[in-house]
Image (cartoon, rainbow over the protein chains, first blue to last red):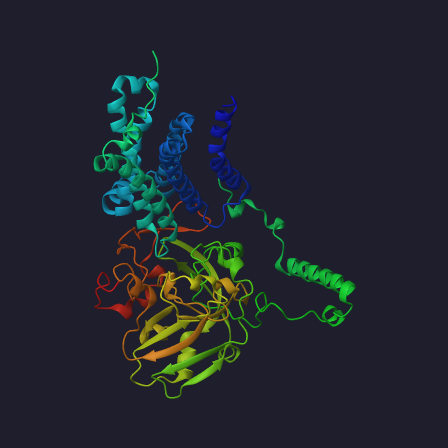
Length: 211
Length: 319
């Protein structure tokens, strides 16, 4: 891979934020800027979660094994946009009214599930370093990072439950997520049903760094 | 500052409407000249520009109203570019573009049901039934945002009195046009088309209930409900149907679109009420477009004079 490729991908992941910043600066966020910021950061959280989850299937199906080097970056960008989304909520929407916020989290199902999805990402972001992979050991690290499945499911439900009538957009995210999780179920269940043919697919996916 | 507030734009920078309209005419003229160059036939149009746009037409003789609030009016740009108009799109930023060529003339409104005489009226006949008034109302969406709009129209009661409902009429039902050729949103079954809303007779007769055909001193823009809409300022915005083609008087409570679609979330009354939350979000506060902090939502959207319509009613039950 060309040396500048990874930094270029990193910068590309920042484009949605840059666009938002530019629109905010130039007055292009329309009549309800806070709503636009909330929706954009939420959309990009979901998109990065789905991109992260698609790395493994694409790697396995196309043999592009080098893609693993981007999985952590995409995962961390999902967490980055989720954090912005959450900050938008507590700052611009609730204006740090902690009481109001806790009330919301407890009472509003879509907030509860969205908040849960965000909280699940925190340990994943914290243990995303090589040091943590070593400390936990590949197997345990991998088990922990399966939390992303639940985080992504929570994210899609969060979106689904908040729309008023038009579920077409959340449906798209749900469909892609279903395919991505379906792949994992197939890989997991497949060999049990048909011997060990697909065993190769189940090899550990974590690169344990050399000391 | 992250977000530019309208206040940051000096009024000297805002182009007066008359000026930019002239500019449009000039551009249209320039285009016509080009067309003449090619076809050599369109001279007539150049001399007397065709009356294409019904919107942007100034309404004469508008009276002021004591029902108007003196709160800051939301900029025209926001009220015409941020629209919940599912017949065009569920994206609030799209109706402005999608409704551009929506035909609002000729337009008739059917008046039927429990009335002495069923009739089909031309919208221009209805508009002339009473002198136009400017009503600057707060408008609160069930989603939690609000605007202040200088509507133009007259009390719905003027039309109802002329329609002469019989003693059997207990409710009024308002139906929005169904025309999926012109309204792309109706091609998907997001809601059960056509859009139907309704009021109890005494609500409809309340002088605040407005039959509306203009705003900001001009004919209603298409994306805001042209040519004829309802404005019921003490209720959530979805009660105020747009592009009305039928007004039907009924003996029983009409089946209204949102209440049918999600009965747990949207009631028939839908009075603005900070104490009754939407099942999925709080209604205690609202974001006035253009303001940074949310403001508290007022009971009946601040129109206390309607409270007597609901004495003895449990508004938590009849939400």
